[in-house]
Length: 207
Image: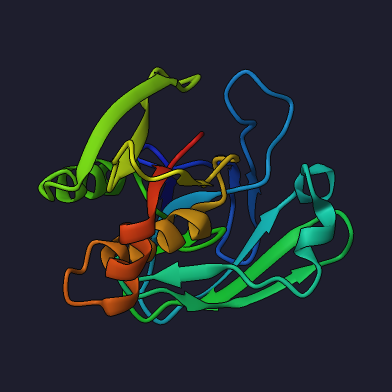
């Protein structure tokens, strides 16, 4: 049995692997911050065995109210994610799951990694309506990318959309991914009408 988060987007600290029924974990703090909330890790174990994973510092996370009625996500292929049994007692977040393969990933929400971000930017700038500007750097030294779409000085309206101001808000970048796919769809009448009237300034990932 092994747990690791040493990969793109990973985050967890393993405190104890005494048994499958009592795995002790801790969420790492964000870079240069006292805040923490999100996790993403890989478990290699025994197929058909039930695992009990306890995140012992969840009660002191940045937003503990967010654990109420929350369910973590899991995936065997890192493409298809599903909810798993999760409980929060005010201090410890407990995940229980019987694995059907010997390798499974668990996460706060469906991850959107930096590699996916780079792919998103590369895909968008293939469109002649899109220009890219780097407006700063994250605490990790990554570019903060700004996509300008449909830029035209004659258009007075500029619409700003900024996503993922906190690292764990991967759902926000999934939204941006879908939004950009539709906005850049030349066959979408609504998108064409919007771009006739406005320039979109989009920061897909602030942090």
